[in-house]
Length: 238
Image 1 (tube, helix red, strand yellow):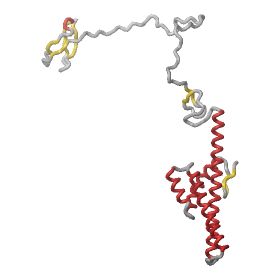
Image 2 (image 1 turned 180 degrees about the vertical axis):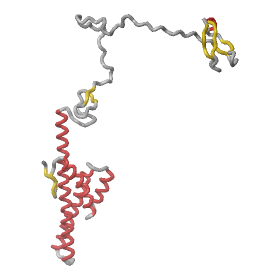
Image 3 (image 1 turned 120 degrees about the vertical axis):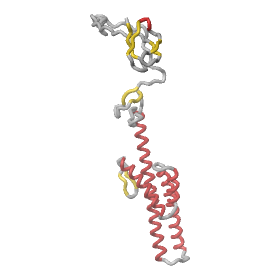
Image 4 (image 1 turned 180 degrees about the horizontal axis):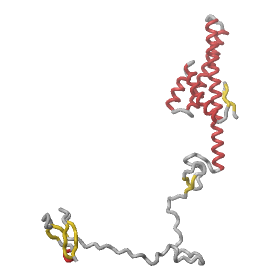
């Protein structure tokens, strides 16, 4: 039986006997050497009399048999996971807190988180109140000092000297106190560089009030978000 194939160089149809399989010869068309390939026969499709099903050998009346080997435990280092009931992300089974949405599941941890947040808000409210008192004292001292200097001539009267010393002492105490509370509150909202700048400004009369107002605005926003009512001289706990 002859084998028909095409020359890979020129495409000319060639024929060769069965004995030429694997041998090389020249193509009569282009003169190139061509290796005779193995013959390819078309397969006959035969319809099977029966196709075995996946459950053909299953006896529904018989119970399942025992496995020859126990099921292997999960590999070391792997942890079972479950979807978070709040956000749906996969978290470790038994996790006390979701690392995606922050939801706390453990009751002990939840109470600790709530208690810690409540204590932090109380601290912010207290520090804000003290800072506002310092700012109020600064304003009062500036007003009194302006009135005294404008309406009274400089004198050596001991009473006037005492009044001026008292005003200066209160002003200095309010500046230092304002600086301290600006640092305490500012550290909760800003980085260390901003806190240092605000602290320096707080030591300067009048100009330091701007820094106090800036920190006060951030503290007021946080307290109001958590249900506090912030007045002129501080917040009222809900």
